Structure formats: structure tokens, C-alpha cells
Length: 290
Ligand code: PLP
Image (cartoon, rainbow, N blue to C red; front, top):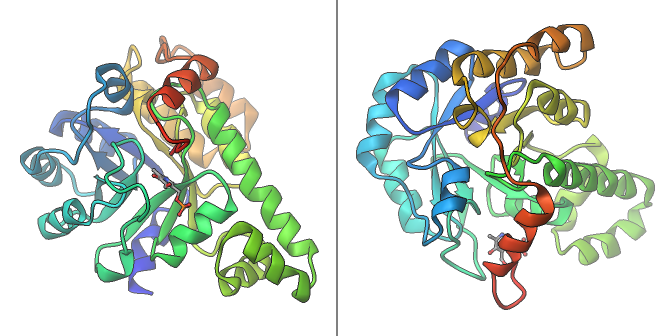
């Protein structure tokens, strides 16, 4: 219950990736509800290649002392030692992130073993509920981080929404076989069907680059958004950060969104989804995507 506290507080908010104390201050001033401290935004991780790991604690500490809002940081999937270090540093939430290179092909972190809350990525309801079973306090779409193309985030959120509707349409007997099909604990699936939504806070992430992208994801029912490369890889980050933060609040008001979208300069150039997916799939052997 305590662990769900911070995740609940971020509802209706925007969480921005930042790599320096100066960027963190821009994010806070723009109205971010939290920042994600990392050495390289996903677009640069994609460009650089190699093994992407937890960031240098020195950089995370600098960002923690630069802002008053919560600071999140990323650990590799399955890398409980990185998560232990981040918890000891005092970060507010750990993102068990597929944006970094996964460290364990079979096991995610047992998040029940930690006091710090975790956010995890998901592409469908099965993945989301498995991560929640492991102790995640918050779920985000995986999307395709670092591409500036929102299509995968849309696909993942629509898939989650659709599978929740299916669960709601099934009767109590049928739900058992759906739980088997999704490879999830029945109690979590029952709770999801009852609530008509994920039982934890659900953000969108992966490719969100404009105020309109923010509105699109919010209208698909998410509680808030993560923006990685979309802000600090654009031509003019500070006004874009403000506009995207405002877009989370005004996501239903197309008129205001029109104003927020005006004169923002160039959005991140990015990499369209098809090319990105080809590269992405090449990076994973043995049929494991992420
Ligand atoms: N995400 C990443 C990065 C993975 O390496 C794996 C493991 O195969 C998964 C997700 C899928 O895990 P699960 O089937 O438990 O949802």
C-alpha cells in the first residue's frame, strides 16, 4: 500500500528523462511530476549501441539535489543488484527498463524484495499483470523508446485496453482459462476485470514527442506519460517541456492543444517505426524481443 503511494501521486502527470541537473531544473519548472535520471536518453542509447547499464550514481545524486520533485532511475531488466544500488542511493522509484540491455533472459527483478517502488514496461495485459505479480507499483507501455514514433505505444495501450474488455466480457469460469492463456495469476485478472483497468497506475511511454502525442495517449486512457528523448532531443526543449506538461492536463481540449503545439520549433527527428523495429529485432537473438 505504501509502495503504491508515489505511483498514485504521479497520476495526471508527466515524467521527463533528464541527463543533467540543468535539464532536471527545466523539467521541474515546466511542471513535470518527476524526472528520470539517466546518462543517455533512449535516442542516444539507440545511436551508440553497446551494452546500456545503470547510470553513474554521481549523476543521479546531482539530479536528486537539483530538484524537489521525485527522481526515478533505471535498472536493467532482472538486474536486482543495480536496483539495490539505486534503492540505497535513495531514488524515489526504480524503472526496470528494457531501454537498458536486459541482464536476465528469464527472470525479472522480484520487486517484493524492495522497499522502493518499481515501474515496469508492458506490451500487453499478460506482461503488465506478470510485472504486477512480481511487485511493480506502476506499469508503462514499452512503446519504442528513442524513436519519436508513437505507434508502438499506441499499439501496446490499445492491446491492454482490448484485453481488459475481453476479460470483462468473460464469465467467472472462462476467466480461469484466459488467465492461463495470458500466463497471469487469476486473482490479478479478476481484479482487473472488476476495475475495468489495470490495478496499478498505467502510464504511456516510448516514442511520445509532441503535445498531440500526449493527448493521443491520454485519450487512450493512460494516467500520465513518460517522455524520454522527445523533449531534450528537440530543437527547443524548454518551451516543449512546458507545452507537453500542459498537454497532460488539457488533453481533451483541442483548442488549447492547438495553442500548445504552436511555434515549438522542430520535434525530435526520430526514426520511423518500421526501420526502428528492424534494428530492434536484429539486436535480439533467440526470438527474444524485449
Ligand atoms: N521484457 C524483457 C526485456 C525480457 O527480456 C523478457 C523475457 O523474455 C520479457 C519482457 C518477457 O517476460 P514475461 O514473459 O515474464 O512477461
